[in-house]
Length: 338
Image (cartoon, rainbow, N blue to C red; front, side, top):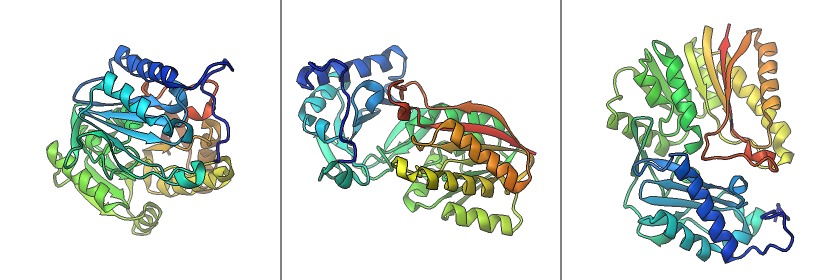
């Protein structure tokens, strides 16, 4: 395994057994309940790995269903206990297993996506977030089906989009697009390389009565599209950039920082003077300071003055463990570009 030691307790006499895991799962769900995050029609991350003392376990609740990822062989061995605890506290209609790329190489786990417990929906399920309805594909959608960590940042994008020509790059299922259109964006170009993601985005736009003549949906690799758009003279008054994770381990940090600099440079070159860049990094190994440094490099390369207006991270259902800095993984930076 790539991770050879995982810490589940500071007491060396504590056993990682049925009793401990049952208590930890229950405590994680109880925290979300106290925070008011368990809307029966909504979605929530109910277990966040090290953030909940359960390294290698992620559980997202989507309405009546739960989606589970195991990235630890140690916890996979206790899957029956974990499923039983989820069944007790969430009472889901079904629990689906979603796997992480590279899990065989990293943990030696030969597992594949599929049902863990109960019934699974025939197609996508609907959830409510920030007043919108979103379809979530629990079987084939990215990660556990949806990016719950951007919930608060999607609402923030709405504050800046009114009256602006907007590009939503790596739009996935339209999470940022919907609030920006509701805010009154003059136009919106949604770009993603995944055809299935764009189908979901179009479905979500139509479901919320936002698929109108302001919207352009483009299937393309993001760097390729940004280069072609710049060459064609296209410019936007706001760009939202939400790329995938660029590094899985510390060995990939150097390449990740180079990637973030290149992608953000391309985005800045598309922005009109005094426009808005809302840019993100979900690479846990890249610190906030290092991510800001890439924006400094972008400023140097482009000759455009970049000023940070807001900085944010993940919402409360993704709690940060001070003993595990990587749990503070999400960076959201809102900038004005002169």
